[in-house]
Image (cartoon, rainbow, N blue to C red):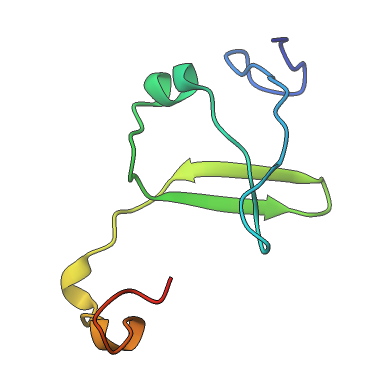
Length: 87
């Protein structure tokens, strides 16, 4: 791990590889120490800001979604006639 001179004093650079997640997306894992330091947890909502001119991605903790404002999904559409999920 090395300190990135273009980042604030506490920022540290760590190399990570893009991993194939599915046929349509890639992912990057985050080090556990970073998650602990930022006090993030599994299931937290994050916001991704992309600056294509600089070639940078910034990930910030997002605002939690209020599920009361969403309609429930019809589970019959995602199931076969015998009630099993299609996937």
